[in-house]
Length: 112
Length: 115
Image: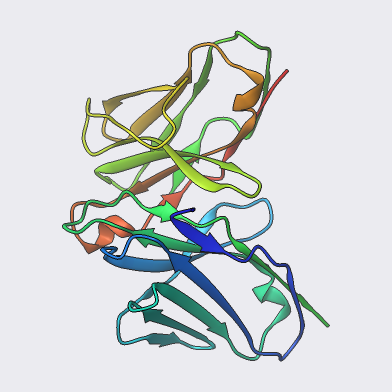
């Protein structure tokens, strides 16, 4: 079983739609969780951290479910510019030791 | 604008050649990383470094070595390139050790093709 698993997609949605991605992780002791975004032929960039209480950044909402070992990303009112691959990232270690584990990514395509 | 710079965007090498991939960051970050990214597999950690002259193996170090002689520079070396090392190579850096250690800044990547 992969340490971090994501549905590869693609998720094809119209502009304005709401779309949600899930990601599961295998190490129950994992400490920190993130979503990175990677545009086509570009490098990954941090989108947002995922906190235990859930957190929101504009149209983006991230949530963590430790009991079921998954994190989610919800995008509301999708824009064409949201088209990208979204990488789920887990840090299984504490104390700033950041050997991050990346999922293979979920591809989102937003169409007019 | 802060930056991680990888010296080559595209390289084509022959099997058995020695390959050097250079990475420089201008953020005074302690941590530096080399990943490779392949379709369906995501990013896999090859080597990382928390300090000058320090290196640690990641998940797939076989066939690779690294060098960190200066804080800002982290080099990945393929001693004898093979076709299964054809991939996109991504260098990253981060602060450490604090909460900023989880925020990786990536370079633009180096796409290596081994023939």
